[in-house]
Image 1 (cartoon, helix red, strand yellow):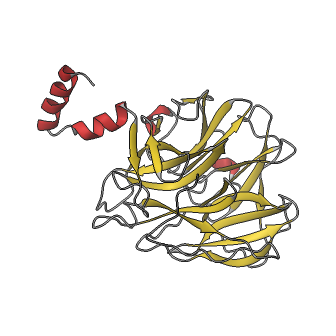
Image 2 (cartoon, helix red, strand yellow; image 1 turned 90 degrees about the horizontal axis):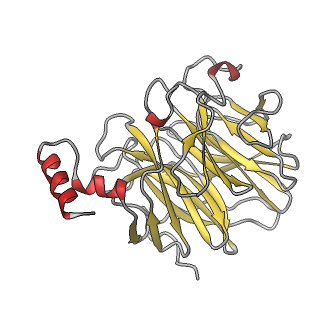
Image 3 (tube, one colour; image 1 turned 120 degrees about the horizontal axis):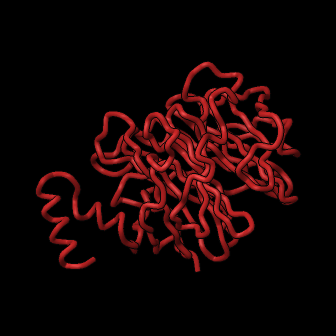
Length: 325
């Protein structure tokens, strides 16, 4: 950043419009070392979604605007990367709620990025307007709204009455190349995606099974030919999970995976294998002293399977995870 630009930003800062630090974080790459959980302490992050590409773990998050908030204030999304879970890089703000002209509320709710054929598809949700998709040639972005309208609209959520039901998209590309999208609040919806990744392919359906008390935050992963559906349940939220032999079910409820995450009413998970180990990435309100349900922070802990394929309950730690080679 040039001296002239810093001087200008300092003047703007004195006027109370924006901080120099905040502007620098948006305009430049930021390298840092984590000291445990929460992973990120220089800003408030939520709703993590992990993507592994080669020897790098990319982490896409929401961004709570500041500490001590009394309600949700999320204007943009963040992207980070690491090769060892200790040293991280944050990239300039890749996507903002205002980049979607069809959005009514300007709230950057939970999102999820996947890669296919060298393109990166970031499925985002807003407060009441539906689910959109932005595309980039690079995981760090910048991203652009590819449709100019919603991929999933409120009328697609046929079994819901409340306006914020079309949230929390989670994409999954199966071993045969078929892509799927799961989402929902109160009802868990899903649909196939076309090969172009920006259109639904067939009808919207919903997941239901005995013991399924779904709040939000669906996430699909696969381990030894079994499909795992994890999701937030209750409120304050815990994370529960179910297993199936087919991505469309039938699913069998397996129990609670993660308890209430500290002083955060919400609990949004991402599960990923990285360099031979499995990790559970989530958020809590753990940044002292202004962390809360509306000023959240992303954390990471190990995930372990039992011999029968079920998952051991997550142990949330302050220390976090050890660096990997």
